[in-house]
Image (spheres, helix red, strand yellow):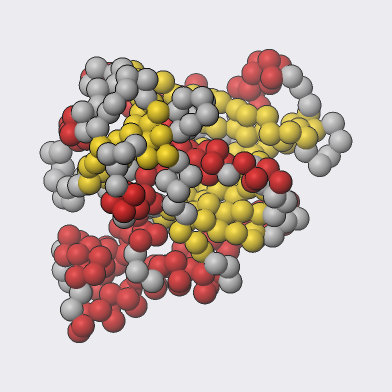
Length: 343
């Protein structure tokens, strides 16, 4: 658990990122002309303790840094979320809104009556008379569950975003020069249960995919190979392996990373073929980006430099937050920081 700072103003935005391994919360003052992070907290979800309610952890995470917001910005991810980049005949926003259900049926593998739909017009498509549209769908049941949990804590949800777009928002919001870029830029969120990929050309998102490979898969593979509990396997992966075990842990990790690299090559290839642009920069966040050897191995196999991206480098910190302390966990806060920077 990491917790620092406390709330100083009643007008701060709160971003809440509920992952499979931890709950991350960030509070920030996003007044005109400045973005100042005022408090943050990370609470790990106990492994193997099924009785732990996530809502209780959220409440503890907020209470420990004395934050009692009326509303929060929330992120959602997982198999209940579908994002598609599609080309449609040019039409107004209102016209697209009216046609959305009909158009979405062609691209969404869910019953349209069971999802919440949203869209964003990205601009002109290469083909004359067409426009490029980002279409997002979330199962209504998943949204209802989140709303119910947040309301049970005495709060409401101001907005719901997806993890990759929250990260992209954090990066683009603090790097205004991004709009001048014409190359492909990949954002990797290396998490506990999955890896999210978003690829943009400049400040326009073009491709998103969720790969169901993360730190948990490495832990489970180590546990199976060494006939030990998953909790012990995680401990070994995080640096607790003795010399006689370190090679076995490293080799198992590489086997799982090879699977991830294969899926990433497919994703990059699809993007490059469709948009005729090369992925040249790779920015990484998420807890697995801290894992020793992971980014070096990905860089080697992808032929690109996979760089850590620290989302707090371009945001002010209140005087009660230590830069050194937050830097040690900053890669885990990319989603929640992106949420508080949303307009």
